[in-house]
Image 1 (cartoon, rainbow, N blue to C red):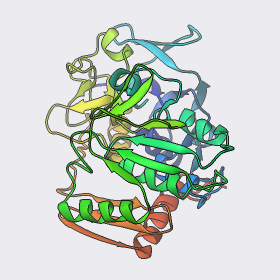
Image 2: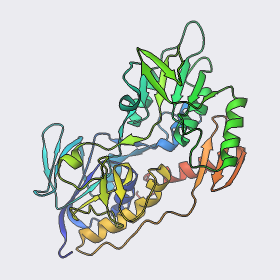
Image 3: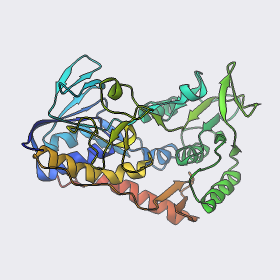
Length: 374
């Protein structure tokens, strides 16, 4: 790569772009101009949403002010949503039909919800993605006159488990909701160690959360799992991961069969090296990196390093290499948490305290005080 970039465009306000903006704030822009294109002024950190539901955090906690961070970094912010990219002519298009030119682009918009595709349509179905819509739904959930709310959480991964515990301990309902966790046929916490699964299963039983290890779907206006009706219920929350957005593949970027942008070890698009992609919308061709918030957070500084190098006309060299095992702290909604690291697992309030410190520490480093602003 020779020469530098005149204009760097960050598409999306995801975890990696938070780290990129913080790098620009500390070291200055690696280009003459930079723009952050994002539909939301604030990033809500998904790791703190269960704590917000259970009342540990206020409404304004767990938020990063993207506009303020971009301003401190010397970047312009455009509050819009990308709907198309032309990597050949180097333009993106927003939903307002505004065209934005770039020399280098970095994509970190996250995936899109897939609840309706997998489960079918129903007005009571809410996807965890986008997180802003999910939070709004929880805020607006009306109380039941004849008893506690009845909620089905669909998805047996870490996200579904934490949301189920949070809702059972919800501070946003006058009465503690009745919660069912429907994991699907893969069961509870696939990919986690047996001791983690046992601790979670025991805690689900202690808190009175029903566990159903069957595939769910809407049939004839009813939610069913393994032939069993889950009616009546008020809300079905899908924690099923994400699909890829359509526009990267439609624009000509190389994608896998599911539409995720294919990138090399340095997060370059394998078809258009002046485009980077990371997070839930990208897939590495050199190794498997699971789509997890843990990896998104840790990959952010590497993305910042590589985008700076590219902006300054140097070849990016940083590679994010996941550790053999990652530490997961699964909040149980009552101030405690279950710690999982490879085959090891433990439970206690100490784990809840550790999770709180890690989450609030990550937020703090991108606040004005945490990033050194005045």
